[in-house]
Image (cartoon, rainbow, N blue to C red; front, top):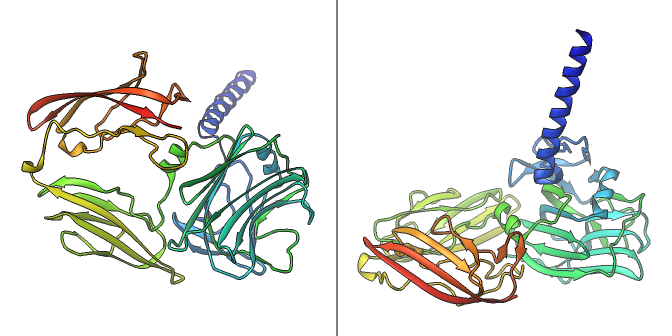
Length: 406
Protein backbone atom coordinates (compact mmCIF):
# COMPACT_ATOMS: atom_id res chain seq x y z
CA UNK A 1 0.00 0.00 0.00
CA UNK A 2 2.84 2.37 0.90
CA UNK A 3 4.61 1.52 -2.36
CA UNK A 4 1.43 2.23 -4.35
CA UNK A 5 1.10 5.63 -2.68
CA UNK A 6 4.73 6.33 -3.44
CA UNK A 7 4.23 5.51 -7.12
CA UNK A 8 1.09 7.69 -7.17
CA UNK A 9 2.94 10.64 -5.63
CA UNK A 10 5.78 10.28 -8.14
CA UNK A 11 3.29 10.12 -11.00
CA UNK A 12 1.55 13.28 -9.81
CA UNK A 13 4.90 15.06 -9.52
CA UNK A 14 5.94 13.99 -13.01
CA UNK A 15 2.65 15.11 -14.55
CA UNK A 16 2.80 18.41 -12.66
CA UNK A 17 6.35 18.98 -13.87
CA UNK A 18 5.36 18.27 -17.47
CA UNK A 19 2.41 20.68 -17.24
CA UNK A 20 4.58 23.33 -15.59
CA UNK A 21 7.35 23.01 -18.15
CA UNK A 22 4.81 23.08 -20.95
CA UNK A 23 3.36 26.33 -19.65
CA UNK A 24 6.83 27.67 -18.94
CA UNK A 25 8.16 27.12 -22.43
CA UNK A 26 4.91 28.05 -24.16
CA UNK A 27 5.58 31.61 -23.03
CA UNK A 28 9.37 31.19 -22.52
CA UNK A 29 9.12 33.88 -19.85
CA UNK A 30 12.03 33.60 -17.44
CA UNK A 31 11.12 36.33 -14.97
CA UNK A 32 8.43 38.96 -14.57
CA UNK A 33 8.72 41.67 -11.92
CA UNK A 34 5.43 43.56 -11.82
CA UNK A 35 6.22 45.31 -8.49
CA UNK A 36 2.48 45.14 -7.73
CA UNK A 37 3.11 44.00 -4.14
CA UNK A 38 5.71 46.72 -3.63
CA UNK A 39 8.42 44.07 -3.59
CA UNK A 40 10.63 42.09 -5.97
CA UNK A 41 8.45 38.99 -6.29
CA UNK A 42 9.02 37.07 -9.51
CA UNK A 43 5.57 36.53 -11.04
CA UNK A 44 6.81 33.45 -12.94
CA UNK A 45 7.36 31.72 -9.57
CA UNK A 46 10.86 30.45 -10.37
CA UNK A 47 12.25 31.71 -7.06
CA UNK A 48 14.15 34.49 -8.80
CA UNK A 49 12.97 37.34 -6.59
CA UNK A 50 14.73 40.69 -6.94
CA UNK A 51 16.13 42.63 -4.00
CA UNK A 52 14.53 46.07 -3.69
CA UNK A 53 16.76 48.32 -1.58
CA UNK A 54 15.06 51.49 -0.40
CA UNK A 55 12.61 51.37 -3.31
CA UNK A 56 9.08 52.65 -2.66
CA UNK A 57 5.73 52.05 -4.38
CA UNK A 58 4.49 54.23 -7.17
CA UNK A 59 1.56 54.23 -9.56
CA UNK A 60 2.14 51.69 -12.31
CA UNK A 61 0.85 51.05 -15.79
CA UNK A 62 -0.54 47.80 -14.37
CA UNK A 63 -0.97 47.93 -10.58
CA UNK A 64 2.05 49.38 -8.76
CA UNK A 65 5.53 50.31 -9.95
CA UNK A 66 8.97 50.64 -8.34
CA UNK A 67 10.00 54.21 -7.56
CA UNK A 68 13.71 55.05 -7.15
CA UNK A 69 15.14 58.26 -5.69
CA UNK A 70 18.43 58.40 -7.65
CA UNK A 71 20.52 58.31 -4.48
CA UNK A 72 20.38 55.14 -2.41
CA UNK A 73 17.58 53.14 -4.04
CA UNK A 74 18.53 50.00 -5.96
CA UNK A 75 16.94 46.98 -7.62
CA UNK A 76 19.30 44.00 -7.61
CA UNK A 77 18.38 41.04 -9.81
CA UNK A 78 19.48 37.42 -9.19
CA UNK A 79 22.98 36.59 -10.45
CA UNK A 80 21.65 33.44 -12.12
CA UNK A 81 19.91 35.51 -14.78
CA UNK A 82 23.30 35.98 -16.45
CA UNK A 83 22.94 32.56 -18.11
CA UNK A 84 19.83 33.72 -20.00
CA UNK A 85 21.92 36.32 -21.81
CA UNK A 86 24.28 33.67 -23.20
CA UNK A 87 21.57 32.42 -25.60
CA UNK A 88 18.71 34.05 -27.50
CA UNK A 89 16.72 36.34 -25.22
CA UNK A 90 14.39 39.33 -24.98
CA UNK A 91 14.47 41.99 -22.26
CA UNK A 92 11.70 44.55 -21.85
CA UNK A 93 10.53 47.08 -19.28
CA UNK A 94 8.70 50.40 -18.93
CA UNK A 95 10.18 53.44 -17.23
CA UNK A 96 9.47 57.07 -16.47
CA UNK A 97 12.58 59.14 -15.88
CA UNK A 98 13.05 62.44 -14.14
CA UNK A 99 15.48 64.54 -16.19
CA UNK A 100 18.85 65.02 -14.53
CA UNK A 101 21.99 66.49 -16.06
CA UNK A 102 24.71 64.09 -17.11
CA UNK A 103 24.60 60.39 -17.91
CA UNK A 104 21.95 58.39 -16.05
CA UNK A 105 22.57 54.78 -15.03
CA UNK A 106 19.29 52.96 -15.74
CA UNK A 107 20.30 49.31 -16.03
CA UNK A 108 23.69 47.64 -15.75
CA UNK A 109 25.14 44.16 -15.87
CA UNK A 110 28.74 44.82 -14.83
CA UNK A 111 31.68 43.10 -13.19
CA UNK A 112 33.79 46.17 -12.43
CA UNK A 113 34.60 49.59 -13.80
CA UNK A 114 36.42 48.32 -16.88
CA UNK A 115 34.97 48.21 -20.38
CA UNK A 116 34.99 44.41 -20.41
CA UNK A 117 32.02 42.06 -19.92
CA UNK A 118 29.42 44.79 -19.42
CA UNK A 119 25.83 45.36 -20.55
CA UNK A 120 24.42 48.82 -19.81
CA UNK A 121 21.40 50.95 -20.66
CA UNK A 122 21.90 54.64 -19.98
CA UNK A 123 20.19 57.96 -20.62
CA UNK A 124 22.43 60.71 -22.02
CA UNK A 125 20.82 64.00 -21.04
CA UNK A 126 22.80 66.39 -23.24
CA UNK A 127 21.73 64.53 -26.41
CA UNK A 128 18.46 63.14 -24.98
CA UNK A 129 19.49 59.63 -26.08
CA UNK A 130 19.00 56.15 -24.71
CA UNK A 131 22.31 54.32 -25.14
CA UNK A 132 22.55 50.51 -25.10
CA UNK A 133 26.04 49.03 -24.84
CA UNK A 134 27.12 45.37 -24.74
CA UNK A 135 30.86 44.80 -24.45
CA UNK A 136 32.82 41.58 -24.05
CA UNK A 137 36.18 43.27 -24.66
CA UNK A 138 37.57 46.18 -26.62
CA UNK A 139 37.44 44.17 -29.86
CA UNK A 140 33.97 42.66 -29.33
CA UNK A 141 31.25 45.16 -28.59
CA UNK A 142 28.03 46.62 -29.96
CA UNK A 143 26.41 49.96 -29.26
CA UNK A 144 23.12 51.47 -30.34
CA UNK A 145 21.24 54.61 -29.39
CA UNK A 146 17.94 56.36 -30.02
CA UNK A 147 16.51 59.75 -29.13
CA UNK A 148 13.93 59.75 -26.37
CA UNK A 149 10.55 61.25 -27.28
CA UNK A 150 10.03 64.09 -24.79
CA UNK A 151 6.34 64.35 -25.74
CA UNK A 152 5.41 61.15 -23.89
CA UNK A 153 5.72 60.36 -20.19
CA UNK A 154 6.31 56.60 -20.03
CA UNK A 155 8.84 54.82 -22.21
CA UNK A 156 9.31 51.19 -23.22
CA UNK A 157 12.57 49.39 -24.00
CA UNK A 158 12.81 46.06 -25.82
CA UNK A 159 16.25 44.51 -26.43
CA UNK A 160 16.27 41.25 -28.43
CA UNK A 161 19.02 38.77 -29.32
CA UNK A 162 18.41 36.31 -32.16
CA UNK A 163 21.55 34.45 -33.18
CA UNK A 164 24.15 37.13 -33.80
CA UNK A 165 21.53 39.84 -34.34
CA UNK A 166 20.82 42.32 -31.54
CA UNK A 167 17.70 44.44 -32.12
CA UNK A 168 16.65 47.54 -30.21
CA UNK A 169 13.08 48.88 -29.95
CA UNK A 170 12.12 52.07 -28.13
CA UNK A 171 8.50 53.04 -27.38
CA UNK A 172 7.16 50.27 -29.63
CA UNK A 173 9.24 51.47 -32.59
CA UNK A 174 12.08 49.59 -34.24
CA UNK A 175 15.40 51.44 -33.89
CA UNK A 176 18.09 49.20 -35.37
CA UNK A 177 19.57 45.71 -35.65
CA UNK A 178 23.29 45.17 -35.12
CA UNK A 179 25.02 42.00 -36.28
CA UNK A 180 27.87 40.92 -34.02
CA UNK A 181 30.87 38.94 -35.23
CA UNK A 182 30.29 36.46 -32.39
CA UNK A 183 28.01 35.87 -29.44
CA UNK A 184 28.97 38.30 -26.69
CA UNK A 185 29.31 37.11 -23.09
CA UNK A 186 28.85 38.94 -19.81
CA UNK A 187 31.24 38.38 -16.91
CA UNK A 188 30.40 35.45 -14.63
CA UNK A 189 30.47 37.65 -11.50
CA UNK A 190 28.51 40.53 -13.00
CA UNK A 191 26.06 42.48 -10.83
CA UNK A 192 22.69 42.91 -12.55
CA UNK A 193 20.35 45.67 -11.49
CA UNK A 194 18.56 48.98 -11.87
CA UNK A 195 20.49 52.04 -10.68
CA UNK A 196 23.13 49.66 -9.32
CA UNK A 197 26.27 50.19 -11.39
CA UNK A 198 29.38 49.25 -9.36
CA UNK A 199 30.99 52.52 -10.31
CA UNK A 200 29.90 55.85 -11.72
CA UNK A 201 32.00 58.46 -13.50
CA UNK A 202 32.06 62.08 -12.39
CA UNK A 203 29.25 63.08 -14.76
CA UNK A 204 27.09 59.99 -14.13
CA UNK A 205 24.03 59.82 -11.89
CA UNK A 206 21.81 57.03 -10.66
CA UNK A 207 18.30 56.56 -12.03
CA UNK A 208 15.53 58.75 -10.64
CA UNK A 209 12.05 57.67 -11.69
CA UNK A 210 9.84 54.59 -11.84
CA UNK A 211 10.22 51.11 -13.36
CA UNK A 212 7.33 48.79 -14.24
CA UNK A 213 6.61 45.42 -15.89
CA UNK A 214 10.21 44.17 -16.08
CA UNK A 215 10.34 40.92 -18.08
CA UNK A 216 12.99 38.60 -19.54
CA UNK A 217 12.34 35.82 -22.08
CA UNK A 218 14.67 33.07 -23.23
CA UNK A 219 13.71 33.56 -26.88
CA UNK A 220 13.48 36.42 -29.38
CA UNK A 221 10.21 38.38 -29.39
CA UNK A 222 8.84 39.33 -32.81
CA UNK A 223 7.68 42.86 -33.59
CA UNK A 224 4.12 41.58 -34.00
CA UNK A 225 4.23 39.97 -30.55
CA UNK A 226 5.69 43.12 -29.06
CA UNK A 227 2.92 45.21 -30.63
CA UNK A 228 0.24 42.86 -29.28
CA UNK A 229 1.46 43.18 -25.69
CA UNK A 230 2.38 46.88 -25.75
CA UNK A 231 0.46 48.84 -23.09
CA UNK A 232 0.18 52.17 -24.99
CA UNK A 233 0.80 54.35 -21.88
CA UNK A 234 -1.22 57.52 -22.32
CA UNK A 235 -1.65 56.76 -26.03
CA UNK A 236 -4.90 56.14 -27.92
CA UNK A 237 -5.01 52.48 -28.91
CA UNK A 238 -7.46 52.98 -31.80
CA UNK A 239 -6.22 53.79 -35.26
CA UNK A 240 -7.93 56.30 -37.56
CA UNK A 241 -11.17 54.75 -38.79
CA UNK A 242 -14.31 55.35 -40.85
CA UNK A 243 -17.91 54.77 -39.71
CA UNK A 244 -21.41 55.33 -41.02
CA UNK A 245 -23.58 58.15 -39.69
CA UNK A 246 -25.24 56.99 -36.45
CA UNK A 247 -22.60 54.35 -35.61
CA UNK A 248 -20.20 54.50 -32.65
CA UNK A 249 -16.58 53.72 -31.88
CA UNK A 250 -15.18 52.63 -28.50
CA UNK A 251 -12.11 54.81 -27.95
CA UNK A 252 -9.51 53.41 -25.53
CA UNK A 253 -6.14 54.59 -24.27
CA UNK A 254 -3.49 53.00 -22.08
CA UNK A 255 -3.13 54.01 -18.45
CA UNK A 256 -0.24 56.35 -17.69
CA UNK A 257 -0.96 57.27 -14.05
CA UNK A 258 -2.61 60.54 -15.04
CA UNK A 259 -3.78 62.92 -12.35
CA UNK A 260 -6.13 64.41 -14.89
CA UNK A 261 -7.24 63.57 -18.40
CA UNK A 262 -9.69 65.00 -20.89
CA UNK A 263 -10.95 64.17 -24.37
CA UNK A 264 -11.73 67.00 -26.76
CA UNK A 265 -13.85 68.11 -28.46
CA UNK A 266 -16.69 66.89 -26.25
CA UNK A 267 -19.20 66.56 -29.09
CA UNK A 268 -20.36 62.98 -29.56
CA UNK A 269 -18.50 61.53 -26.54
CA UNK A 270 -20.16 59.51 -23.76
CA UNK A 271 -17.57 60.68 -21.18
CA UNK A 272 -14.63 63.07 -21.44
CA UNK A 273 -12.55 62.21 -18.35
CA UNK A 274 -11.84 58.49 -18.65
CA UNK A 275 -9.32 56.41 -20.61
CA UNK A 276 -12.32 54.71 -22.28
CA UNK A 277 -15.16 56.54 -23.98
CA UNK A 278 -17.73 55.96 -26.73
CA UNK A 279 -17.61 58.32 -29.70
CA UNK A 280 -20.71 58.88 -31.86
CA UNK A 281 -19.76 61.86 -34.02
CA UNK A 282 -22.26 63.23 -36.54
CA UNK A 283 -19.45 64.46 -38.78
CA UNK A 284 -15.79 63.61 -39.34
CA UNK A 285 -13.91 64.54 -36.17
CA UNK A 286 -10.38 64.37 -34.74
CA UNK A 287 -10.45 63.55 -31.01
CA UNK A 288 -7.51 64.47 -28.77
CA UNK A 289 -6.69 62.92 -25.40
CA UNK A 290 -4.68 65.15 -23.06
CA UNK A 291 -3.21 63.78 -19.82
CA UNK A 292 -1.19 65.19 -16.94
CA UNK A 293 0.81 62.55 -15.05
CA UNK A 294 1.53 62.53 -11.31
CA UNK A 295 4.90 64.23 -11.75
CA UNK A 296 3.37 66.93 -13.99
CA UNK A 297 4.39 65.35 -17.29
CA UNK A 298 1.86 66.26 -20.01
CA UNK A 299 1.00 64.17 -23.05
CA UNK A 300 -1.45 64.32 -25.97
CA UNK A 301 -2.57 61.89 -28.66
CA UNK A 302 -5.13 62.17 -31.47
CA UNK A 303 -7.35 59.82 -33.50
CA UNK A 304 -9.42 60.67 -36.57
CA UNK A 305 -12.96 59.29 -37.08
CA UNK A 306 -14.30 59.82 -40.58
CA UNK A 307 -18.09 59.78 -40.86
CA UNK A 308 -19.81 58.85 -44.14
CA UNK A 309 -23.34 58.11 -45.35
CA UNK A 310 -24.57 55.22 -47.51
CA UNK A 311 -24.49 57.55 -50.50
CA UNK A 312 -20.70 57.90 -50.13
CA UNK A 313 -20.04 54.19 -50.72
CA UNK A 314 -18.68 52.76 -53.95
CA UNK A 315 -18.95 49.00 -53.48
CA UNK A 316 -16.60 48.25 -56.37
CA UNK A 317 -13.85 50.43 -54.92
CA UNK A 318 -12.26 48.01 -52.46
CA UNK A 319 -8.86 49.47 -51.50
CA UNK A 320 -5.69 47.42 -50.93
CA UNK A 321 -2.08 48.76 -50.97
CA UNK A 322 0.18 48.20 -53.97
CA UNK A 323 3.09 47.26 -51.69
CA UNK A 324 4.12 46.76 -48.08
CA UNK A 325 7.39 46.41 -46.19
CA UNK A 326 7.42 43.72 -43.45
CA UNK A 327 11.03 44.43 -42.51
CA UNK A 328 10.74 44.98 -38.75
CA UNK A 329 10.98 48.77 -38.73
CA UNK A 330 7.48 49.17 -37.29
CA UNK A 331 6.12 50.92 -40.40
CA UNK A 332 3.79 49.39 -43.02
CA UNK A 333 4.28 45.93 -41.48
CA UNK A 334 0.86 44.42 -42.31
CA UNK A 335 -1.00 43.99 -45.59
CA UNK A 336 -4.77 44.42 -45.18
CA UNK A 337 -7.92 45.88 -46.73
CA UNK A 338 -7.91 49.65 -46.21
CA UNK A 339 -11.63 50.51 -46.44
CA UNK A 340 -13.19 47.59 -44.57
CA UNK A 341 -16.19 49.78 -43.67
CA UNK A 342 -17.80 49.08 -47.09
CA UNK A 343 -17.87 45.32 -46.39
CA UNK A 344 -21.03 43.94 -44.82
CA UNK A 345 -19.69 40.38 -44.81
CA UNK A 346 -16.39 38.89 -45.97
CA UNK A 347 -16.59 35.58 -47.79
CA UNK A 348 -12.85 35.23 -48.38
CA UNK A 349 -9.58 37.16 -48.45
CA UNK A 350 -6.62 35.12 -49.73
CA UNK A 351 -3.04 35.86 -50.83
CA UNK A 352 -1.02 33.70 -53.23
CA UNK A 353 2.61 33.68 -54.32
CA UNK A 354 3.71 33.74 -57.97
CA UNK A 355 3.45 29.95 -58.19
CA UNK A 356 -0.15 29.89 -56.97
CA UNK A 357 0.53 28.64 -53.45
CA UNK A 358 -1.71 30.22 -50.83
CA UNK A 359 0.37 31.98 -48.19
CA UNK A 360 -2.42 33.72 -46.24
CA UNK A 361 -6.15 33.46 -45.57
CA UNK A 362 -8.08 35.92 -43.39
CA UNK A 363 -10.47 34.85 -40.65
CA UNK A 364 -12.05 38.28 -40.32
CA UNK A 365 -12.45 41.49 -42.26
CA UNK A 366 -9.79 43.28 -40.17
CA UNK A 367 -7.17 40.53 -40.44
CA UNK A 368 -3.92 41.32 -42.22
CA UNK A 369 -0.86 39.45 -43.45
CA UNK A 370 2.50 39.94 -41.72
CA UNK A 371 4.60 38.68 -44.64
CA UNK A 372 5.32 35.28 -43.06
CA UNK A 373 4.45 31.79 -44.28
CA UNK A 374 4.95 28.66 -42.16
CA UNK A 375 6.85 30.71 -39.60
CA UNK A 376 9.38 32.20 -42.04
CA UNK A 377 9.43 35.54 -43.88
CA UNK A 378 8.52 35.24 -47.55
CA UNK A 379 10.86 36.42 -50.27
CA UNK A 380 10.43 39.88 -51.77
CA UNK A 381 8.46 39.92 -54.99
CA UNK A 382 5.01 39.98 -56.53
CA UNK A 383 1.95 38.44 -54.82
CA UNK A 384 -1.73 38.17 -55.71
CA UNK A 385 -4.81 38.79 -53.55
CA UNK A 386 -8.37 37.54 -54.09
CA UNK A 387 -11.28 39.00 -52.13
CA UNK A 388 -14.98 38.07 -52.16
CA UNK A 389 -17.38 40.19 -50.12
CA UNK A 390 -20.92 41.52 -49.73
CA UNK A 391 -21.65 45.24 -49.92
CA UNK A 392 -25.13 46.75 -49.68
CA UNK A 393 -26.63 43.26 -50.21
CA UNK A 394 -24.67 42.77 -53.46
CA UNK A 395 -21.84 40.25 -53.98
CA UNK A 396 -18.50 41.53 -55.26
CA UNK A 397 -15.02 40.15 -55.89
CA UNK A 398 -11.65 41.70 -56.56
CA UNK A 399 -8.35 40.26 -57.76
CA UNK A 400 -5.12 42.23 -57.87
CA UNK A 401 -1.39 42.21 -57.26
CA UNK A 402 1.06 43.85 -54.88
CA UNK A 403 4.75 43.78 -54.04
CA UNK A 404 6.52 42.64 -50.87
CA UNK A 405 9.54 44.84 -50.18
CA UNK A 406 12.21 44.20 -47.53
